[in-house]
Image 1 (cartoon, rainbow, N blue to C red):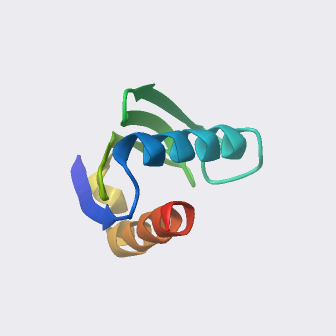
Image 2 (cartoon, rainbow, N blue to C red):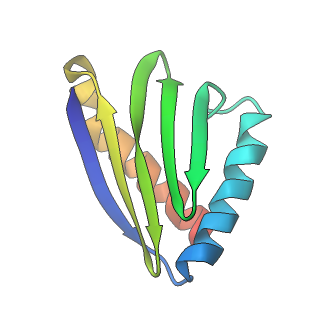
Length: 99
């Protein structure tokens, strides 16, 4: 497995950011979206996740802190060609929902 790691800044308290993301993930789960086949488990302000995104198995951890979210996604080596586009999409998603 290979990893995608990034940090995305935001202007919220960690608990507020986690609440906002939890609501977004719940809403997206019931819609046809990239998150439809991904399960999120929340513990405090951290989210672990696993599932398939566009047919690729992923799992990881999202640590929501005051002013930043740290994301680590484990993907198969065969999917590393998508590292930059995936990182960009994660960053854009977090900025749009926490900005």
